[in-house]
Structures are given as C-alpha cells and as structure tokens.
Length: 302
Image 1 (cartoon, rainbow, N blue to C red):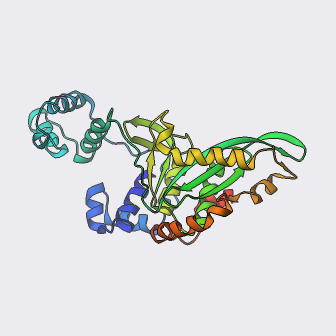
Image 2: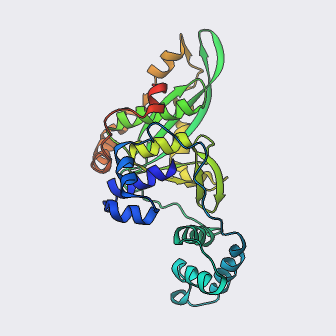
Image 3: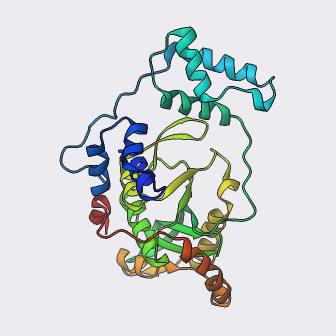
C-alpha cells in the first residue's frame, strides 16, 4: 500500500512522467495509471507486503565502505550508485539500486543529530494526541483529542474522541483538512502505532495500511520525529498542553460523546486571530486542494 502513495506523489505532486516513475519503481505503466485513478487498491488487495530482495551478506560490506568513507574527503566518498557498482563487480550482487540506496541513506542518517528549524515553512503541519478527564452523561472518563497545528501561522485545530483509535486518527485528519481549507504539504508525527507499523532504523518507517491509504488519498508528505525527542514537534506538543489548560480546566461536562466533538474546533484565542489570519494566508496559498470524495476508511469513521 505504501507504494501507492509514493507513485501517486511522484506523478501528481512532483510532476514526473508516468514512464519515468514506472521505470524507477519497476512496475508497468498500466499499474501507474491504475494507481493514479484510485488512491487505494480497488478489488483485490495484497495481504502481505511485496517481498523485496534482502541485502543479507552484503550489509557488512556496505557498512565497511561507509565507515572507511568517514576518513575520506567529503567530495571523494561513495555514492549509493558507486557502492552498487562495487557490490556487483566485486561481490556478485544481483539486486537493484533502490534497496542499496535506501540502506545507504538510512545508514548515513543513523546517529546524525537533527535540529528543528526556528522557522517553519508555510503549508506544513504537526499532529499529536492528548488526553484529559471529562464528564460525559454524569460519568467521569478520559477523552483523547487530536490536535493539528500549522506552525507557520499558528493556526490550529482540536477535536476530541472517546479513544485514540485508527478511526479517530482518520476522522481527525478529515475534519482538520476541512477546517484549514486544504491539505498540508507535509505533516510531522511522533511514532504512533496508528501510523508506524515498524521502526526500520534511522528515519525509515514501515507505515501501517490505514496511514498509507490516508496519505495516498490526500497526497501529503510525512516526517516522523526521533523517539523520545519531544522537541522535534514542540509546536504541536505546546498546543496539546494549551488545549488541556484552557479547555479542560475545570473538568468540562457534556451530555453525550457527540456534544464533546461539537465543542471541539479552532483553538486560536480571539486576540490573536488577526495576526494568525494574516500568516494563514501564506499557509492557504501553499495547502493542496482536498481531493473529491472520501477515503474509504475515513468514510467509515465520519
């Protein structure tokens, strides 16, 4: 499923030709055209991810090359293409370029310190869940609320749910995109199991099927923070605390779960809305238009 999103973004967002994308991903142009028609696979759906050749015994060779490169001038280090050439010439490697490139990229980034920029590009977002106590129909219980923040303008959206589930995650995105009037170009997440099926090392993630379908339908790029590094998405974590302090104190009371969601929405203070509106014009110019129709999984949640 993740391949669907990558192919659709390459053509619809990056503007690359269908032929070039078919060659890069090793699929037919008919397959590319089908992926452009549907944001999720119609009819038959693969139960297991497509098998890819493993680097296996060549991983040690690549690691040795990269370790040796650390002592070499930056302009005279191996590229992924050069490593592939050496694997084929010296070690009989029969695999393709992509698997070598992905491993080299992950290995290069692994352990490298990342810094969050003080400025945030227009059109990018951050997402997180928070939790707080509420009283619904006379019963005290924990509510989970999804927050989406546009750090460039500080415009933001909050919506509460009974639980932090996949359905809540999907519905929260659909509602937030409707509120903002478009889809962010890139969204930063923590490593929630709703989106991440497996940590692959470095910045690489195996995404869940539900998240891959959401991404393929709305065509946003993603980024995941480092484990236990809350400052990677400090803006949205600040919004989580702001919403709890300002909307959950004292503990709010609601007659039903539906009334909790109706009370959710924009969280920008009245005094700041003029400044946010000015900055949000930059965000709005950058946001992608929402696609027609609903994502199948999201339709079940809404």
